[in-house]
Structure formats: C-alpha cells, structure tokens
Amino acid sequence: MLVLYTYSGCDSCRKALSWLDSRGIVYENKAIRETPPRIEELKRMLAAYDGNLRKLFNVSGRDYRALGMKDRLPRMSADESLELLAGNGNLIKRPFALDGDEGRVGFKEADWEEWLAPRGGE
Image (cartoon, rainbow, N blue to C red):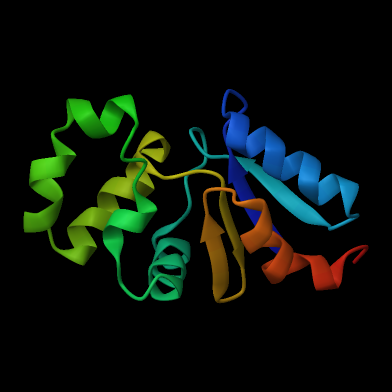
C-alpha cells in the first residue's frame, strides 16, 4: 500500500493528497513531523534515488538551515544522515511517498502521473 508522509502546512502535500483523492488512489497518510519515516523506509527511498541523500532532505527548510546541513551533509555517512532524518521529520522533503521499493519525494504532477495513475481506483 502507498504510504504518504505529509505536513498539514505544506502546499505540495495538500496538492498531492488532492491529486491522489481525485484519482481514487488508496493511501495511508502519516504526519511526517510526529511520525517520521523509519530507517528501513528511508533506506528504500534512498535506493529509489540511487543513493543521493540530498534528495531526501528538505533543503529549503528552517531546520536544514539551522543545523547547517549544507556544510554538514557532505561529511556525514549515509547511516548518520538516515538516523538524523528518522529523528526529525522537518528535515525530510515532503510529501514523502513510498510504495514497496518505489517512492517519490516532493510533488510533481507529471512524475506522479507516470508513477501512480495506472493504478487509479485501487
């Protein structure tokens, strides 16, 4: 089942939820701040992005800037980065959508259309 991690104050998250609902795609929605993705889920998403850790981070977020992640991230191991993300949902790019070993971070309608639309009305 498609699991979606969102934040209610996020415009991209609201657009993704609306897009999914309009196509009848079934999903489980989780609050990313209160219940960040687990390490195992983050590892699957990381694999979906060919190991590019930066893709998983909300690089425009306040926490990213406050923690100096622009300078820290290149020096961190993957395990350190994933631990940090699992402990702070604000650092994760959202929406964070995972279905098995496939996933997307952020919402680009054309990309989601190609990925999920064929299963509409599950």
